Image (cartoon, rainbow, N blue to C red; front, top):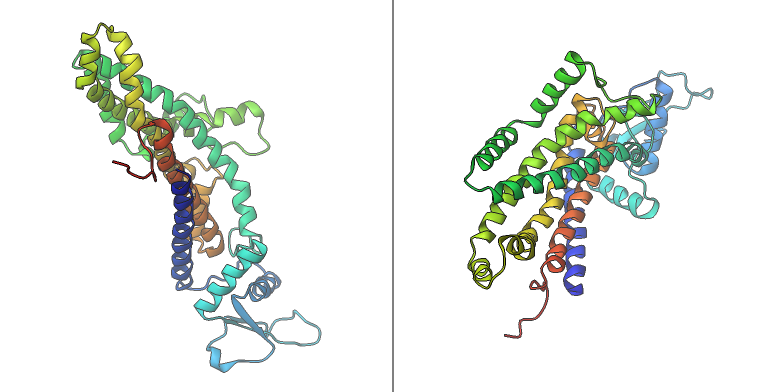
Length: 351
């Protein structure tokens, strides 16, 4: 088992390295984005890019490097009249410097648009708690509600209760998340005026901040509850119709005993690992939600970084989503062996 765990972790590292390397190289093929601001901010930005190894700084033209990205000629930055030229390094040289900066200094680059010259990793760090908080709360709410509804529907199979639950689940699971949040915003903020119409600011009162969680958590929970309910119902119905459960009934166990001791326990084997995969899904789905509700999280930051062509911030955001997905997938694979003792991943077959 431990040998399998080590292999999965190493494979996750290799996968993350390939994904991020490909993303970096592809983004560097896009047009170079200059900083927005005064010329002195632009100069600071290019000097910082030269220190990181992405551009070359020179006090004279270098014709073999092609057209310069920017020059201080014609500006009044220096009293001695020094003129600097900045040239773009070859992509693979930038890639090498990027890797070295991460390994040696944990430096993921600086922002070019969102917060000019600010550390990209610090920008992500300030946004991450908001996104993780919303997603974790929605998981804690949707898991018990979804599984409970699924169990109820399975126990009432082919009854009006089952038909009503299944119909509602199909309706809600078919509605996109941005439609759900749009309806919630209309009902609770415009019509009823119970909740804030956007994410409260940092200076807002604690009660208003708590109310700000209601709409995004509900919007993320609806789809997850439907997914858990449908999956739980399907698994439990399959287990309840199995031969070993019928055998348990013939041996004298009551229906309640069969369900609690055998059916639910075996149905949970595929259900519990699905919680991790569902967390990955809602984390990526919160991008739209964060933009609509003006939430300062990593989802809205990802979209803003794309629109503003802030490649350094985009790389760190991409790395965050990649790491979360890979860590969840590793735990997902490992969890099978702990949930079901019959599963022994990596064990030798002695048969």
